[in-house]
Amino acid sequence: MVRRGTTQSRKTEVVVVAGIRTPMGKMGGAFDQLGAVELGAIALREVLARSPVRSDEIDQVIIGNVIQPSDATNISRVIALNAGIPRSTPAHTVHRNCASGMQAVTDAAEKIQAGRADVVLAGGVESMTHAPLLFHDQFRAAMAKLSKAKNLQQKLAVFGELARAPWRPRIALMEGLTDPTVNMGMGQTAELLAREFAVSRSEQDSFALQSHQRAAAAWERGWYDDEVMHLFAPPSYASVHRDEGIRAEQTMQALARLKPVFDRPLGSVTAGNSSQITDGAAMLILSSRAKAEAEGWPILGYLDDWAYAGCDPERMGLGPVFATHKLLSRYGLAVSDLTRMEINEAFAVQVLACMKAMDSESFASQKLGMSKAMGAPEMDILNVNGGAVALGHPVGMSGARLILTMLRQLKKDTDGGLGVASLCIGGGQGGAVLIRSEPWKS
Image 1 (tube, rainbow, N blue to C red):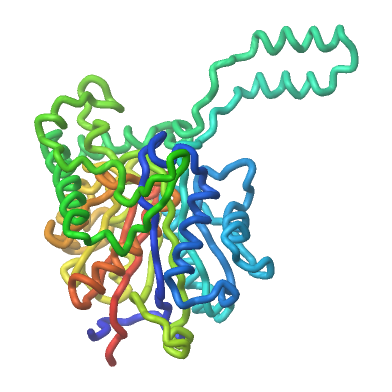
Image 2: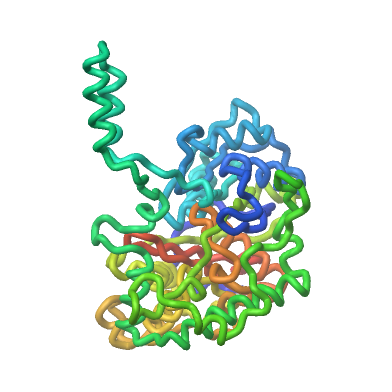
């Protein structure tokens, strides 16, 4: 493989020496009794057990998480200690919405490149099942007054305020999936893309069906066996290995019967062509290439570069286009140079809109400053083993999962080449990571 174009200086090559993820459980499903701390610690212990890297060789732990538990502030530190990482090893948590897991991994890579660490354990975790229900602020204010009331008369007055306060809880998950800067839910941004890029309901359902079919086929041929650990979840402690949301028998007829969720009755985005709300964790061990080779550790692949880019919050689903363009442009590369590509399936329409934007000369001219379209990936290299529509999208985990699955594709399936793992980010951003399975050749 020959490096093309002008590149940034790379004093230290960053490699991934191990990675694992849990199965993804549907909200309220297999992992109903496991919180984010437990899921993260289970995955962290597993990746160490499968790796030649000892826990005392880890210099730092960085974990991405979105719905951070109130009883585990700095969840990365709690997970690390619960999993047996030495107390002398620092840990911190990162949050970039849906790219939190990706941010953890790229932050780890930057620590290694800067010479501030040799080995970093990084990943992402999310328990969307345990997103909290919140009291309204009026209720909170009354409770604060109650704690300060000094006599019965004052307490009775506060009880009156409590009785008048809204008792219906605020749903933190729904609030978190709404962008306050534009007052649009993520599903509403997907509907906007469907209209602007003329993506039909049938196209979306067809893409969703393909996601389930590809994921089911990958599991049937054992492709995910080494990527996904067995997890013994309470209360039965029966083994869970397969992602819970895959519907191998999904049909276009069943998808067509579902009603729009975000724009009733005329919308086209449904529960069936959207990513599933799920729980899960993914963990990777990164090191410098020199350290891995000196220790004789296996090298799963190389993280060559990464990019994050901003875009319109109303069209946050186009984030992968901007981030991928920014990333590949540094190297004089095109999408056609990639062997594999992952675009996280937040919504079927979001991926399809990205592909139409990539193929659009007017979009390239107006938004990217290019004289010609950047070009979309062929469908036979995109999300080849299914995506979030079938597998699920635990928001803090997905970025790490995408990197792990891309590393394995390049190592296991394509005998080399370049890959990009990308995703959209709520709030109007995109992230992309350039990955390879072999060293650059001069």
